[in-house]
Length: 334
Image (cartoon, rainbow, N blue to C red; front, side, top):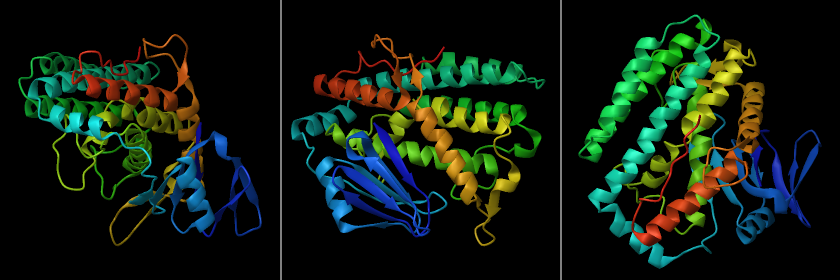
C-alpha cells in the first residue's frame, strides 16, 4: 500500500473506474490504482472533487490537507470503523498509572536507544566528537528505567532529546547547523525538514489508529488535552528518528539538498522548502516508508516501515483489548 502526495498547485483530483486521477494545470495526468492506495496528502491549493471524496470515503482512503508549508488543516475520513468496546477499554486503561508507565518506559527507552544507534552510524565517517553526548544519552537511558511517574519519565526523555539534537548539529554539514529544536514555524532548514516529516508521519499514524477503532485523542504517555491527538504523539515517538530524522540526515549528508532550496517567510520568519525541494523531500520520505526493515522480532519476514506501523498499531490494539501492555514491544533498531 502507498500514499499519494499532491504538491502541484492548481491540480485536481478526480476518479475513473478503479483509479484515482491527478490532473495538473499543464495537462499532465497521473493515474493511481485504488487498490494500491492507502492515503492521500494534499499540499495547498489542490481541488478534491466530490466524486473523489465519495470514492475515498467508500474505500477507506484517508485524506490529509496541509498548507504548502506543511501546516495541518484537517482530514477527510470515513466513520465506518468503530469498536465502542475497545474505545471504552482505551479510556479506562489511560487512567491506569501502572500500565501507562510500563508502556512509557518501553517506548521511550527504545526511542532513546534508536537515537543513539543513529548517532553512532552518522559519526562513523565524521570527524566531529560526540562522545560526551553519547555518554549523556546512555546515562539518561539507564535512569529513565527507574522513573516513578510519567512526568519524571518525560523529563528524562526530553533531556535525552536535547542531547541527541545537540549531537546531530555537530555531525551535520556546517551550512545546515542549527541550535536545538524549534517549530511553529521552524526557523532553519533542518527544523523545516523534520517538522514537515513529523507532520506527514503523524497523520499517517493518525489514520491507522482510527482504523483500529482507537481514539487518537486518548493517549497513555502524553497528557490528554483539548484538540491534541495524544495517542498519536505517544506512537510517533517510536518512529520519528528512524524514519524522518534518518531521511533528513541522508539528504543533507548526501548533498541531495542545499540551503538555497529553502525560502523564508518575512512575516513569521519561518523557513520552508521551495517547490522543487518539497517534491524531492517527499519522494525521499516515501521511498523510506516503502523500504524494507526487519526490526520487529515477532515477524518472520521483512516488512516496509509503513507496514511496520500497521503491525505495531495492531499489536497496540490487542494490548488495549487485554488491558495490559506487557506484550507490547516497540521498534528497536540494531
